Image (cartoon, rainbow, N blue to C red; front, side, top):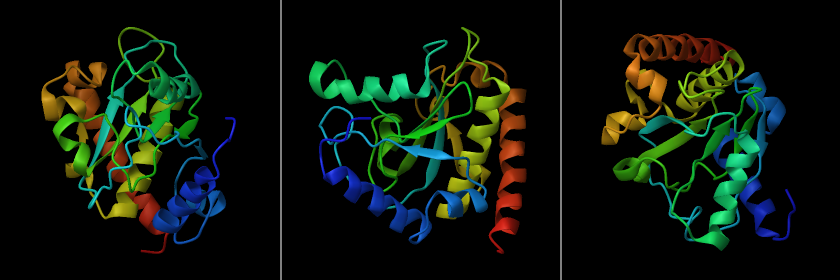
Length: 203
């Protein structure tokens, strides 16, 4: 990403201090996180309004509804909304088809992803290879690891891991709405990863 505003460095430092107590990628991964590529959006009213989240109560899982798209292309779509002004939409994180994780918004700020729950929810968009909306193994693995790590960061459990569907009734993430057993398995995998992360963190 081309960096033209010094504020981006400040935002990256703020994320580090808030979520990792001054740690960086090595510490995050030692705590159970996947590698996170921090590519914060330029502040703007269409995708990064810089509205504070007072308290994180939920982690919401979404799907991009754009088969075959990459994490960085979805991030760049959010960035371009400042120019196109087509819509107000964004997400804190996007998980790609190769398991890559791109962070778009600091966890201390609101994204435009989960409607009424935007005010207290960290949102994760997941890429998918086809129209079914099912995540491939790499995306699934990183989504589970990212969600679990965020749960340990904010003191949440799997009862606080939700789908976009659980807020609005929208068919999102499609495969995990239409196949409830798959969603239950994902939450079970997240729960197991939370326990692993707490062990890694010595808690």
